[in-house]
Image 1 (cartoon, rainbow, N blue to C red):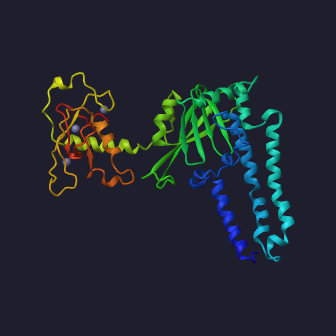
Image 2: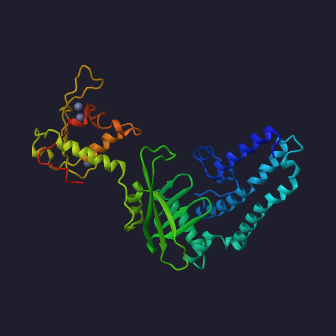
Image 3: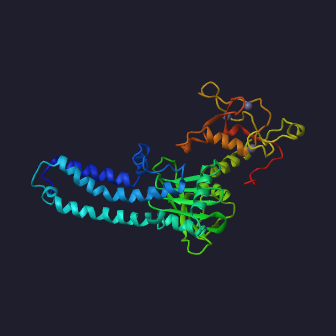
Length: 373
Ligand SMILES: [Zn+2]
Ligand SMILES: [Zn+2]
Ligand SMILES: [Zn+2]
C-alpha cells in the first residue's frame, strides 16, 4: 500500500495531527490550532455575539473536520513520488469517497442555516424560550455573558460550562445547550475520578456530571461536567440547591482535607495564654473578616537554629488570624505539586514574615476548633 517512505511519514503525521486537532489537545489549543481561531475572520467573536458565535463555530467545525480526509489526499500529491502506491492508483476513487463526508456535513449546515438558522439546535431551544423572536433570549445571553459576574468552568479543552445571571450554557465541540436557571432542575447523577489530569493538577481529581432538566416542555435535558471542587461555586451561581443522587459521593477538595489535618495538629499544640480578652474584643480575623482570631504563632518546635536552613522564630504580632485562614495561607505557600512535604515544611507569618512551622501554630485558650468543621 505504501511504496514510498515519505508517504508513510506524511500519513503518520496527518493521523497524529488530525487526532490532536479534533481532540483539541492543550498544545494545539495554546497555539491557536482550533477551528474558531483558524477561521476567526469568518466566525464572529464570542464576546460580540455569543449565540451566533457558537452557531457558526459548531457549523464550521463539522465541515472542517469532515474535510480532513480530503486535505490528506490532496497533500499526497506533493509527497508521493511512486506511481505504484495505493493512493496514486486509486486517487480518483478516494477523492470521490472523501467528498461524501463533506457533502453530508455541508448539507446538514445548509439545512441549519436556511431561514436565519431556523433549524440549528441552539436556535430551536431559544425559540422555545421566545417563540415570537428567538433573538431576544439570544441577545440577553450575549449581554449577560459580557458581565464580569458570569461563571466559566472548563473541563479539559472540550467542555465548558457558562453560568450567567439567568442562563446555564453547556458548550462542547458540536453542541451548545442552554437552559434558564430559574426554570430548570439540577441533579448530580454520576461521578468519576482521574488520577492524572492532563493539565497537571496534582493528586486525584473527581469529575461530576450534572443533569439539567428544563421545566419547559420540548427542551431536551443536557449534562454539565465539572470538577467536584467547583460544585459549591456552581451551586452559588445557580442560586438554588443542586440535588445529589444517592449513588454519588462528592470528594472533598484538597483544601478541605488539608484544613482538617491542620486543625487537628493545631489542637494538639501548646495553648497560648499571653493575651487578654480585651485584645480580641471587636477583632475579626484579618483573612476572612468574620471569625474571631483563635491562633497565635509562637515557637514551640525544637528545631535547631544553628543547623536549620530556615529556623523558626516567634512572631510578635498579636493574634490576628483564625485557624482556617492560617491553614489556607500555609497551604498557599507550599509547593502545589508535592503535598507530601507540606506538614514538615515551613511558612512565614503573613504580616511580619517570621518563619514558623505547623508545630508553632498555637490555639488560643478556650477555643476548640476540632469540632468547627
Ligand atoms: Zn479567618
Ligand atoms: Zn507575625
Ligand atoms: Zn517551628
